Image (cartoon, rainbow, N blue to C red; front, top):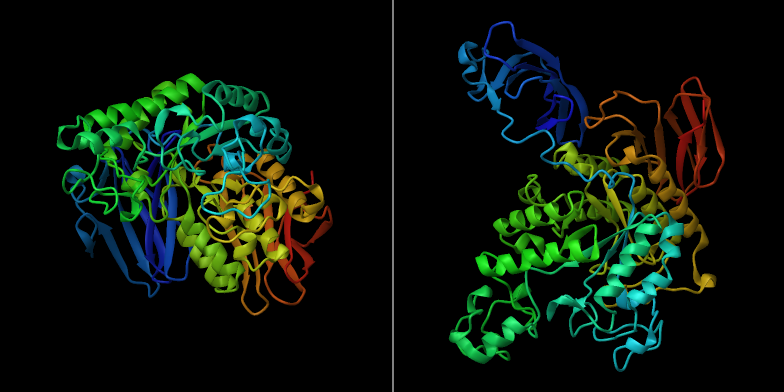
Amino acid sequence: MQPLAGERFYVRLVAEAGDLSRVICRFADKYEPGHESDLALAREATDGVRDYWTGVLPVPTSRLRYFFHLTGADGSMTFLSEHGFTPAPPPRRFHAGYFFYPYDLPADRFALPGWVPGTTFYLIFPDRFANGDPTNDQPGARPWGEIPTARSFFGGDLAGIRHRLAWPRDLGVGCLYLTPVFTSPSNHKYDPADYDQIDPHFGSSEDLAALVRESHAAGMRVMLDGVFNHAGDEWAAFRDVREKGADSAYRDWFFRIDAFPVDHENVNYETFANRIRNHPKLNTANPELREYLVGVGERWVREADIDGWRLDVANEVDHRFWRAFRDRVKAAKPDAFIVGEVWHDAIRWLDGAQFDSVMHYPWRDAVLQYLNRGVSPSRFAGWTTRVRHMYEPAVEAGLMHLLGSHDTARIRTELGGSAERALQAAVLLLTASGAPLVYYGDEIGMEGGDDPDCRRCMEWDERRHDRRILDAHRALIGLRTSRPWLAWGAFEDLVADDAREIYAYRRVARGPLSLNGASGDAVYVALNTGKSAAEVRVPADGAGLTDVLSAERVAIDKGEARFMLPAGGASVLVPEPR
């Protein structure tokens, strides 16, 4: 349930699949008689296990009372309220037993930054993107393109990103997400030694500010990676604890130290994942540490003008810390985007007071299973229906959908090296709801296994680029830019043919976040994961459709579009101008 802009309220009832034939929501916004109304909810979707009944209520006041009148598939009737299932409705007097929503938070409590819909994010691992200043290379830096090890350095830096800004700009990217850039002894920088300094092998704070300025001039924003769950063992506060033991002023900045002195060899202190000695875990409930780290988050927004933070291991940090972090960052830049790294159900962090978004790994799991033919089209449709209904609509609109990252094998490798499946994955990503994230190099078909192999140097030799995958990314990112409603628009499954392995869906420019009702704009997507070409038929309006991937035209006859889809093929169709 969610209050919406325009004095509206979104309501969702989840029922066992096939259990109900009709759902009425009776609601009131005042105590006086005559102020009750009925709204028939629509069976918006099903995942094969649950049906999702939804609707938008007009609520001009700040108090909502409601219950449900349910009709079963067998014709039986019952009522659902705070009293549970009853044969009669709850009493109207004072609306006792009605569900109650007092609007204790405003309709814009989950106000997604306005620039996020339509934006495609691009993940850069700085040491591996481009080397723009060889004079600051780490000693022993390896030749560009060599297969990486866990300790390899290749000299990538902020100057290299600045030098190559035209690449993400021409791809259509709207925001760069950089993995950590602060001083650290590692190539990945997830063991920070100084939160207040840019790693000298990447450049300086002036270089970061210049990168942000130049990105903004090119129409792109910049988001940094914040590591606040743990620090590096070279951080001054941890060195102080190692040197002074129980007398250190920073002893309570760390989550747990079993005994003093700190034993770095036998690790008698809490670490990230309970196994990485150079990642001592931070006690983010400590007020002094919280003030310092929240200040770090605010400082880089104000000084470098960054546009947001991606937050590492966000689910292992104190909730009070994230609330304070949000308050300070949003005070510095109200439209900053805050994204948490949470690999599972993240509803505890998506309450409007902590994160704007999380990295949507549950969606990625479904895509890998489907494109590796581990689940059928109908099971995939059900799986993604359930995933789409994990959160409120305002949350779904900003969820960071991804296929891969510096923490996972590359998507093409995950799909057995298949260029066709990698392209299909890009189609799913760039026509999904939320905010898509492209991992650098995926747009040209790069491969790589688990870390560190997924962190190979960006391939700049165009002869090694997969042009078909690259052209698909450019076309689809352009589609998202021109149709920002893809972030929140309706999602309608049209075909889930398990026998022929065809899956098709339609995205429509309407939904609970839309104030102007239905729109004629739509995008039709079809995939063939089978081994034979197949004809696809989908209901469609208008005279014809155009495939943004192939530029081929598909005619519409009597409300139906028909087209052939080759084995391993994908089509993304948009209506021809009327």
